[in-house]
Image 1 (spheres, rainbow, N blue to C red):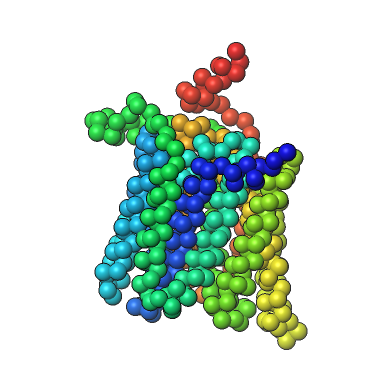
Image 2 (tube, rainbow, N blue to C red; image 1 turned 45 degrees about the vertical axis):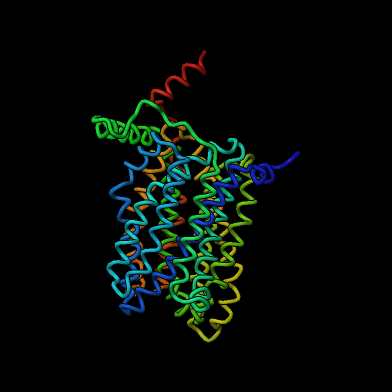
Length: 430
C-alpha cells in the first residue's frame, strides 16, 4: 500500500502550496539576516536588531482577528496570489533607503502586514488540498520547510552578500516571491461564501460578530485552545532561544558565530526531519496528545542537559571543545522533540476547526503569536545579560517541563456553539 508520504508528494496542488511556502520562508529568513546585518552595521547596537522583530510583530495586534475574518469570506487562492505579489514589490523598496534605518522598520512593518493575510490563508487552505489522514504528513513537510528556510536563509544569506553585494538578498527575495506568486496562481480556485461583501455598511458589524463567535468557539473546544497554546508556547521558547543563540555560541561553545548554523541549526533540522517521520508512523497508534507530551519532555531534558554540561565546561575537566562535539547529537534530539510537539499540535488544530471559520482561528493564532513572542524577543537578551546564558537555558528547560506537565490536565469535552456544528450534530444523530 502506498504510504501517505508518497501520496502527499504526488499531490500537485499540495506541491504548489508547499513550493510557495518554501520560497516565502526562505526569503523571510534571508531578509532577516540581511536586515539584521544592515541594522547592526548602521547603529552598532543589538537593540536596533531587537526592534526589527518588534516592528515585524506589531501588525499582529492590528490585523490579527480581522485578517482571519477576511480570509474566511474571500478566496484564499486570491489572497495567496496577491500577498506574494505585494511582498515581491515591497522588498525592492529596501534598495532605495540608503542608511535610514527607520525606513527599514517602516518597510518591515508593511511586509508583516501583508504576512498577516498570507500565513493564516496558507494554514487554512492546506486542509482543502489533502485528505484528513494525510494532514500529519502535509504538516511534516511544512515543518521541513520552516526548518529548511531557517537553515538555508541564515546560512546562505552571508555568502550571497559576500559574493554578489549587500543588496543581492533583496533582488533574490523579490524574484523568489514572484515565483511563489506563480505557484499560488496555479492552485485551484476556491469558492468563498456569497453572503458577505466588503463594501456593505454592515461589514464591521459582521466582523465583530464573527470575532466574538470565533472566541466562543475556541473557548468551547479544549482541543482547539490546547493545541493553540502548545504551539504558541513552543514558538515563544524558540524565539527566546534564537535571541540568546549568538551569546551561547560565543560564551559557552567558544566558537565563531558563523559556525552556529552547522553546529546547532543544521543538527536541529536533521532531528526535526527524523521527528516528522516518526510522527507520521506513530500518530495513529500513539495519539497526538502523548506525542506532544513526549516531545515536550525530550526538549526540556535536552536543555537541562546542555545547562549542566555548560556548568561542567567551567572547570578544566570539561573543555568547550568537548561540549561542541556533544552539542551535535543534543541539537538533533532537540529538533526531534520539537517535531513531536509542533506537528501533532498543528494537525489537531486543523482537524478540529470547521472549514467555515478556519481562517479566523488561524488569524487568532497569529494574533496570539505576536503577543507571546514580542516580549521574549525583546527581553531575552537582557535577561541573558543579567542572569547569564546558562541560567536562562535552565529557566527555559524548566518552563518546557512545567508546561508539558500542565498539558496533561486539559479536559476533552466540549459543546457545539456554532450553527454549522449544531447542524452537523443533528445530522449525526439522524
